[in-house]
Structure formats: structure tokens, C-alpha cells
Image (cartoon, rainbow, N blue to C red; front, side, top):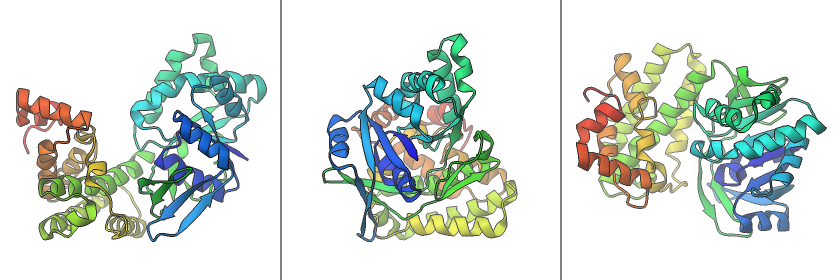
Length: 362
């Protein structure tokens, strides 16, 4: 079986390709970094390092330069499953490649194909679909009918690239891949750890608020106090107390708001908390805190969690403090952080809360 993985970054190599290898797939990466393409083709394998230091090879793999549209289209036509891990903002840039693949597939192999969107974004499918509709001619829109745009919840923590030829990826051992059951075309691909769920939105929201939200809470509060890793920040008694309080309140709020099975919900929450606190991760705060504007959107991890807590009568204090810390965060090497600083200097923090976060008061 053949899997086409668009993007050979930390998630592409460190999670999706690992699941494919465990499931008996050959993985073909599509990647813009030529040196990485050459390295993957030289060795026909890549590797991951677990947080305990153990390493595991991933094979067989190969790679195609993302500029080679014809080669990508040929691989797309042969694939049994495809996936992306490029960052949600970069999804529209894939539209020309996918369109070429759809044309080639229609001519050579018109079987349905599920494209797993490994972007951790509720709007990933509409963003890519809109870009494809603009790229394809009107008479070609029918090519989208056998394509499933399937959102995924990426829970594995891939914290760092490690030097090597090819470079490795340091990851935790989480191996579940919840996907949008209602977007699948045909039977689910035979991938180890695949979990079709519905309604997808509430599972995505739980992951976003509990895992990413608590992660961001630690990062922004930790940055305020000069810490450089999540693990160091969690040793601060006040930050740890806010983390625990936020987790407990969110766990209760989700059970009030959504029909989760309590036993499954409790197990999921405990797993998230254990992995965030993994002492072996040494996760940089700069990685978790980057792109603060995205993380301060009304439905994203901080403001969304704050609103859910307030709506369900739970204490939103931990996330109120996290939002204020995010507004104060500044990393000059991060364009979003610089833009946030400029916005606050020009209009004030209350303006950002009101116009960007859509919070009247905090």
C-alpha cells in the first residue's frame, strides 16, 4: 500500500509516516527542502527518538521535490491514502499540486481517495476546498467528488528535529489518530491508531482547549517569569496550580457541554495531563508560544477555553491570566508576535481584546 505525505516536517515524519510504516504502507513524502528530499531518497528511511531516548526507524520511504508537479501527480494517482502536515496557513499553497494529482488520478485510477488533513484546524477542509475550487476550472469541479477532505486531531507531541542524515524527530508515544468520520469516502484506510469520531467538532475542541490550551497557558505564564521550557515553568508552584485548576475546570465544563462518555473523557484528560508534564520532553516555550495572534482568536485554545468555562459556570481565572500573559508575550523573531506588539502599541490591549479576541471584558 502507498501513502502520499505532503510535508516532511516533524509531524509528517515523526507521526503520520510512523503510523503508515506500522500499518504496512510505503510512504512517499512531498517536500520543498531539497537537501531533505535527497537524504530521504539516499537512505529510504527516517527515524524517531522517543522521549526515553529509544530510537525507531521508519521505512520504506522516499521523497519528491514539491516543485516537481508531474512526479507528485503521478504519486497522487497511485496512492491508497494521502495526508498533509504543512501548517494550516500553507494548505492553499497545496491546491495546484493536488489539482494536478486529481487530473492524473481521474485518467489513470478513478478510485476514491481520502486526504487526511493533519493540521489541527476546524476549518482546514473548507480552506483547502475553497483553494481547490479556485484552482480547478469549473468543468473540473467534479474531480473533487471522489476526494475525502478528512480533518484529523494530531495529538502526538513532536518537539524537535534531531541532527542526522536524514534528521530525526523527538516525539512522545501517543499513537491515536482521531479523524472526521463523516468526511470519509468509503471504508477508513487501514491505519493503526485511526479512530473515526463524530461529531468531529467536539473532539477537536476538547483536544484544542485541553491539550493545546493548557500547553499555551503554561508557555505564556512561563515566558512572563523568564522560563525557557514547559518543564521548567511547571516547576513554578503558581503556574502548576493554575495548570491543575484549569484542567479540572475544563474537564468539568466539557462534560456539562457535550455528551462525552465520562469514563472515556476522564481517561483522555489524564492522558493529556501526563503527556504535557512528561519530564523527558524538555519542550521549548518559544515553540509552544509562537503565533500568539492565532492562539488568541475567539474560537482558539485560550479565548475559546475561557468562554467555555464562563458559559458552563466554571472558574475561568487560569485562562484569563493566560490571555493577559499572551498579550504581553513578545518574540521579535516571530512575525505574529511582532504584529501583536504593534497592534497593542497602536491601539492598546483593550482594543485587541475587543476587536481580535471578541471579548468585551476579561
